[in-house]
Length: 361
Image 1 (cartoon, helix red, strand yellow):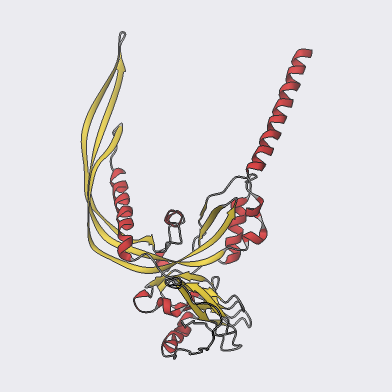
Image 2 (cartoon, one colour; image 1 turned 90 degrees about the horizontal axis):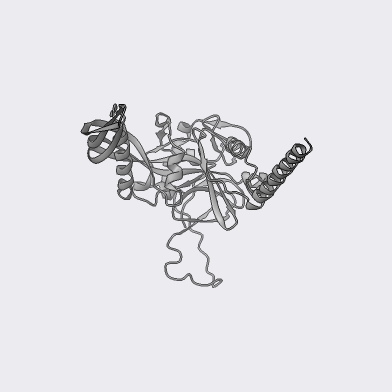
């Protein structure tokens, strides 16, 4: 049986969690507050805690098929004894029986332990309000999206990211033109001059994020950037209390290709901004060399709402630090046609009225 970690209040023994407003741990039962540093001893103590053994002899149920449980993990809640089933990448959750926040400490042990974490600064109330504001004025949005109970399903998740850093030496070649036009009494003239333009230089990259979780859409995760990494702190499991969390299932090595794409695109864009005075500029080739490369493993805060409508899944994500929100909205076709036919009727009535008045006149 895997091990769970829960932080207990020394005053009332209630489960405590991280408070985004206070940036401290707080007990929701007696309102006692704790600094993160004061709870670091919990991690060390739990490392020495013996593994619990509560085995039963039973013939109930059937045997799992080969490979069926490869991605499954089972935990026991320390508060109520309830059993929690999660996949192999879940790092923090809550007990479905007593609701207490729990952390799967085994998921963040050894080489899986993150280097950094950016704590949530926006709480669930702020995330729900951001969604309400996002929905305002969108009259063709299906009602299920605006339903209060659905909005309350927003979840705070620490998403695993690889943060890449490197010094880049780049060389980019462009094909450029200058076009001059003039005319006389007989002809119009166009003169096109062609140029070979090159740019080279060095840029430094730090904390280039690449999503390390296959559950999250990479494009959406990039849409809610940037994060302020000056607020990143050394990882402590206490920050996960009260939130969901995943560990990576895409390794740093598997993320290098995406990191290179981002570095190349940023380098080429920076060089392109220095090319002026031409009518057209077309990139021909680029060469990027990286030095002093390294990567860190970090958990970044994201509020997520998943909604299913008409057989399609829709996901909204919000940066848990800055509040930047991204997500696609569906259109209720029934409402669209009601609005369209209603508008067409109004226009037809207006045209008829104008025509009638013109006829009378």
